[in-house]
Length: 142
Image (cartoon, rainbow, N blue to C red; front, top):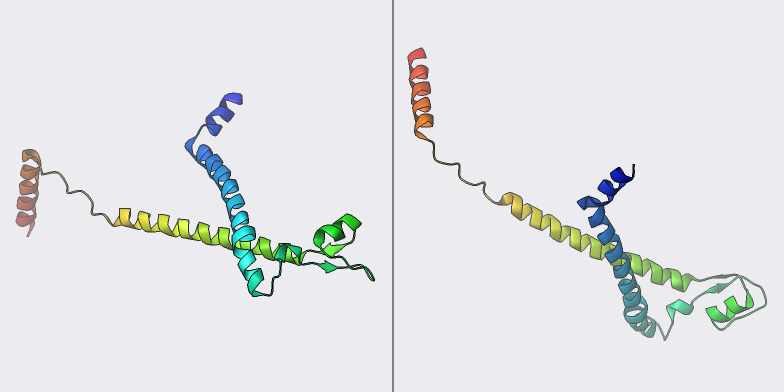
């Protein structure tokens, strides 16, 4: 069983999948940084200096909190919809990037498939003779 597992793990598909998962995790961190550090600040500025990561709904009555951190420190139940917006943008950017990569790969596959097949090799003397015999036999049947 150990030998079978080793053969399975060392197959090309499994190794490719492992590399893809590692690169995907790193790409996810890059996209998260892009959304939170590059995309959201200008959007927040355009919307009147709103920090999306600090948008929340306080579910306690009579208490107000200045920030998500203050509400969490007090143990108040809150809905962090600003962080949800950031997460949705993360997903949309990752999905768009994956779509663009797959689209590019599909175009490459189409180009490879569209390449003309190689020309068949020239027939040998024996093949030419067989073709002549076949043609003569067809002519006799008519």
